Length: 199
Image 1 (cartoon, rainbow, N blue to C red):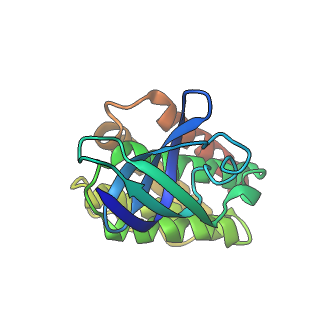
Image 2: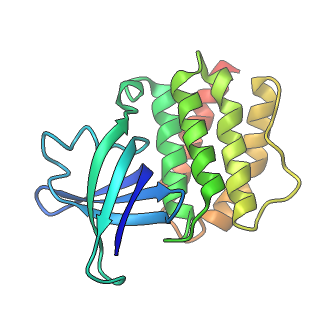
């Protein structure tokens, strides 16, 4: 297996003393995992951050082997991680993606939507400018995985966005994260609490 694609890093777990096992969402290959040698080193530590856009190269001798990943930073989310609201939003949306999607099934629409939602989180003047995009991504994720109903991306004030978040919460918990660790939904609860303070 040899592949190269633009990717969004959605999760990273320490492996050994200096390496990282990271998960990436790509438009062409879907969610893929890779072994990043030196991922905890000085050079790559700022790159191996969930939410970052990277140029990803994967190589493996067989389909069953965890591929080696080489990554180059395309766009960093690091500057926004010092702000509580954007950091909580980036943490939630990437953890949701990493936990809910099956491996190696392409979802090009979700890749584009996640990229758009992350850009909105980082470049909108306030949470009022990106909260609707984040909830719209949740709606799209449920729909793409076959659990979506008539929900649409909420338009309007923050109260409508929060009401939509509250409606979607049980479906996300039940359908997308039923067998996952509770700390993924805890990230959403933290984000909902922060957004509630500005409504």
